[in-house]
Every structure is written in C-alpha cells, then in structure tokens.
Length: 506
Image (cartoon, rainbow, N blue to C red; front, top):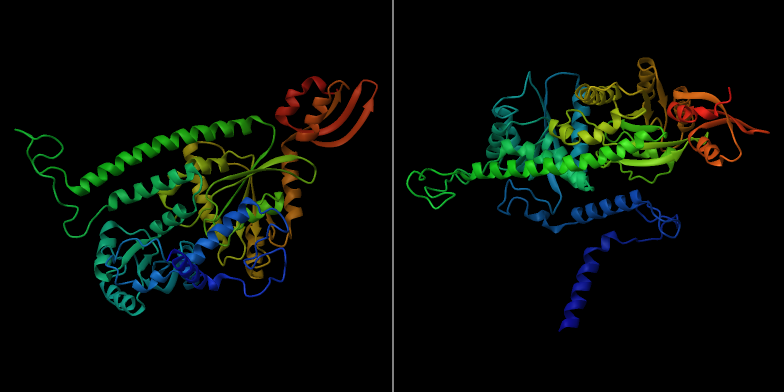
C-alpha cells in the first residue's frame, strides 16, 4: 500500500512539473535553458544563484492551480501570497503629456510584474486632481466595477498614495482588494530583502504605513473589551474598555519601537564598518541611480563581482560592497546601493537612511541613468531630489558625481542626442556589451588622480613594506634605484602622502 502511494505521488509530481523539464539539449553545453551558467563551466556566483532561486519561485507561482478559485474563496480583499494575482492598473492624469502618463503607467506595470502579478488592464483618467472620495470619481468607479466583473481580476492598483477613506470606498464599491503604489513598492521590498537589516527596515516601513490604515469589516475592530478590560476590574475601573482597533494600533506602535531599536543597533555596526573604510586610503565609489538602470550590471562589468542582476525593479535592496582594481592598478571599493523611483514612499526613505548614507559619504558617485527609458531626465530629477533631501538633513557637502548613461545599445538615438545636449559631465556606456566601460574607468582614474598628491619618495631598501603600500594604494609613474634606496615617482591619496612625509625626496 505504501509503495503504491509513493508511485502515485511520483507520477503526479512528474505530470505537474513536466512543463518545466527541458525538451531538448541546450545549444550551449555550459548553460541551462534559463541562460544561467552551469557548474560544468564554472562555479555559479552568488548573484546567479539568487537569480535562479527567484526565477524558480516565480515559475512555481505561475504554475499554481489555485488560480481557478479567484472570486470564490471567500476572502475577497485578503492578501493571497500563494499564487499569481491578476490586476488592473488605474492612474489619474493631472499634468504632463500623454507620453509621460503612459510611461508612468508602464512603470507601474513593471512594478506589478516584479511583485508577481499579471496585468490584465491599464486605465487612466484625466482630472485636475484626484477625487477626494474615490480617487477616480463615482462615474469611473462604476465603469471600473464592470471591468473588474468582466475580467475576474483579484486586485486594483492605483498609481498614487490613497488615503484610508479612498481605499475603503474603492474596496466596498469594487469588492476586490485595492492597493496603492506605496503598498506595491513595500511588497516588492519585502520580497527582495535578504539581510537582517533589510528585512527590519522593510518591516518598519510597512508598519509606519499601515498604522493609519488598520481597519476591519463591519464592526470587527470596533468591539470593546468591556468593564473588566485589562485588569480584575472593580469600582472605578469599569468602562467601555479598549477597542480591537486601538489594541492593534498599540501593538503596532510597540513593534515599531522594537524595530527602531534593532535598526539603531545595526546602524551602529554599519557606521563602524564605514568609519573603518573611511579611515583607509582606498577610494570609496558609490553607484547610485534609478531602479533597473543597470547599476548591478555596471559594477559587474567594472569589477567582475558577480552581483545579482535581474531585469526587474528593485532587484537590489541590500548594499553590496566590492573591492576592485582599476586599469592603472589602483585599488578602489565599489558600493552598489538600492535604486530610487518616482514618488518613493517617505517611509522607505526614512527606513533606508543608513543605506542611502553610503551615497553621500562616498569619494565619488557614479549616477547611473537608464538611456533606454523614454524620459531619462525625469529619472535624474527623481534621484537628485532624494539625494538632496538626505544631504540637507545630514548637513554634509554634496559628493562629486559622474553621470553614467547606461543601456545605450537599447536607447533611442534622439534621446541620447538630447542627453548630450543637456548634460555636461556624462559618460555613455553599455554594461551589457562593454561599450564605453574603458572610457568610464579612465574618467574615474582621472578624477581620483585629481585628489592625489604627486610626490617623489626615497624609500630605504629595508622598508619594503612602504614600497608595497605605495604600489597598493597609489599610481606609480616611475620607479628607480639609488645607493640610498628606491626612488618612486607616485600619485598618492593626500592622507597617505602626509603619513609618508619622512620619505619625501625633496
């Protein structure tokens, strides 16, 4: 009986996963059908393993059979995490051109797909300002209700931050779950965060957002505990008690206080590591920019770091620091940071402050822009706005910046021509093809050279350790030998040049 059951289970599993098995041998024996390198050709990097894990999870979700019970499961507006959701995107067009609102809706669609949703419809309405009651107005709500009934979707996503009243009104009218852009971005962050600090930051941001939106259906959260609530009761202690919604908010505030304390401790550890890096003579280069602009691809192209690369928004949440050598032999440290987006929720900016501080405290920032985007200048504006806010609050000088326009192999030549006309200090590259990478490295070397001190050192033959440090942290222009020691013509960081003052050959 047991053997028969095991054989039946194996047959069911074989049938369920038949679609995911290769039907023919891949053309490249070193790659599987998903395009990832196999262990036969090389050892997979951490980024490749992460990408394979994410892709496998999504294939499992897309193959889920629970999809048939969309509207009949009895939980019309609850979160469904075990299957792919079908969604309708709704936007309000208050200003700008038609092309701009369509680009904004396409970005919202990319966010929804990154969160694991299937977009069924995209709708937008032209209004002077969003309707205060239902975001899109009662007439459009009636039209949207018919579309929801016809398509059988699970969720409506609005391109904006809904007030609690707007969200409740829409959910009651549409009888499906309604979320806004902020909730969508928070959901993506919750899926992609891997480190303990990243998960805590996302949890805090979610709680800060949800504490004003705690609610229930009917009177579920308005029930009161009664006269003996919270104690043994007695004279003077009887009363209406605490409602469930008040208790939930109290628990949220308590959990938020704990998370803030944990994050503060993690921030201390991060600041210690940052101070250690700051105390070293190795230049710190932060790679910042809009989400999915190709920051991780660029750091891989320049360092071969093997950082996770995925064509999805917010693929990178946890900062990745990699040490590398430039063409002139100089050691540098690259830090890949979390991406920005238009209308980035304020809760996330606050929660990821310690991460974003990596940008403003770097010796140089490579501001990566997606050249294939129809409106790259809007991306630059969004990133500069967030960085400017952080600089203003920390009261620190703005770091030097080189604008890097990536994905030029996919970009519209007219858009690139506009960028060349508007931007001054810019480098055009393609991290995918390698075009322009050498020019970017040369620009980085030129900038770092401008920060260095040009000195000539006379190092005794007994101080080989000094010669080694000079080669590691400086750019050696020439090296010769005399009867007194090694004569080195070198560019060094200012701090190291001051430290080696006794060896200056004056």
